[in-house]
Length: 353
Picture 1 (spheres, one colour):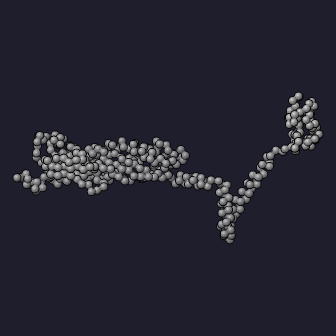
Picture 2: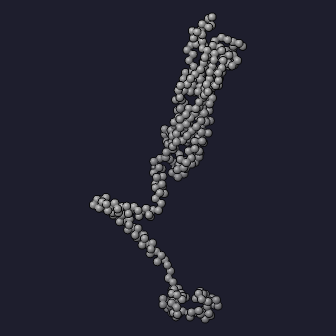
Picture 3: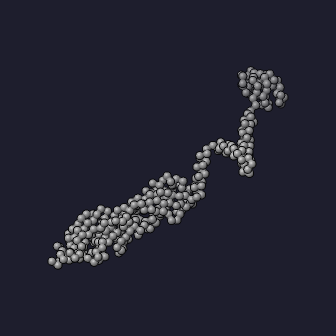
């Protein structure tokens, strides 16, 4: 009668379970409120939970998702620690911790200070980055030993700082070892994320944690590098610089015509005049250049002087330039042998014609 009266008075706990109504609780200590656990009590562990019994500070039995009726048969460690005999049926005291094993999503990370990087094109530069990540408790007992301690409640705020610093360190190593140029980082976010994810999990495993995802949303370059990129983009869009200069000069003249009395209009007009003058000179030089380089040609049927090489008209006996006597057409000047039309050397004596 006294045993059942204790249950009625609420001195014994016959149902142990935990409903998580938060989004950031990692460990919850079941509130015993000074009561003892009834042998045969119902323990309910839901999906994404693990229940851990602790006896006087020592980790005991661990229960994965399911429904259990507590007895010596399914509490082997507690039975050994308390030296229970088989069939022990008395109430007992123990601490029960529920560990949340779900993924904690959409956690934000970012570089509080710039990360140094050596780039082949820009030298030493400083980068800033940010993104999101998710993690979970992979080993509940290790997490309780190494991180949780003896508090009654533990949230993600307790480990977020450690994880963020580990992420930034891992990303710095990933960028350095990948040797991806700064201008190509944006096209390799997925590769960097995967590399960093694999590199950082071994660092979190001793804490009982696992990094499930790591996403780089943006890596911002220094302002000087971004300006250089903007200039290169502008030059690529412009294409033909000559046509672009003509277009600018025409636009400047139009603006000057719309505002002829203004000082700005005068300056623009002068600038346009200079630009147009330069383009005119360049055009004239381009037109004259072929005339200066084209070699002189003899008249139809003529030849070149054998002494000075100047063109000589057909039938000319003496060169009008140097006065040298010219050989009769089709006859070698040295030996008088007949020559083939257009021959430059005599086939008989080898004299130059």
